[in-house]
Figure 1 (cartoon, one colour):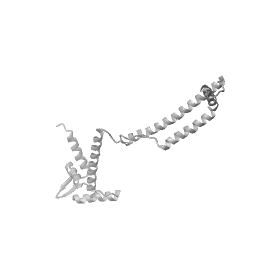
Figure 2 (cartoon, rainbow, N blue to C red):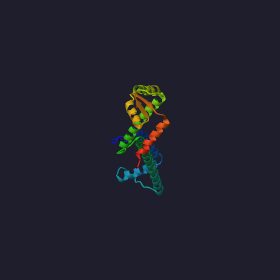
Figure 3 (cartoon, rainbow, N blue to C red):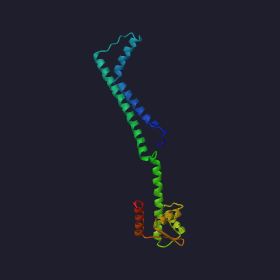
Figure 4 (cartoon, helix red, strand yellow):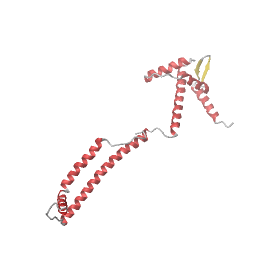
Length: 208
């Protein structure tokens, strides 16, 4: 339904249900409501076209019955048409629901969505590296930290990943919340990290 060239069509089962209901209902209406009127009309038509020598006429009573029968037939046709329209609206609603709930974005919004998703992944990457470096509680090499994160993913989600530790550590070092000395990385405490990030954030909007 999300592809632009797709068309919503009724299933054969739906067509059979509508058609079968209309056929059975129409037969019942013709037999019970229009039977006598149709016999009279058939006699008149046959006399007019010379197919019968028996003169046929319609009395007031038969005319009223014919009018009532025509009303019943019109009501039946309208009822079946309403059924068809309602089922069609049901399919169109399903299409609208799918387009609304499953369409992530369109036009220029696609680029904003992709950028936001990329930013979220970069942020998660840095948070994971900082967290595991913090709980280690001692200076560690990038290889040790990388192994720690990948083992956690394997145990927690039963999924093997190749964590980009160098990219994450580069961000954390640039932000000043991870210290790199003698080939080892060490995370500063959370209060100090908050203060450091807050200072950097304020400096972005500095008017000096």
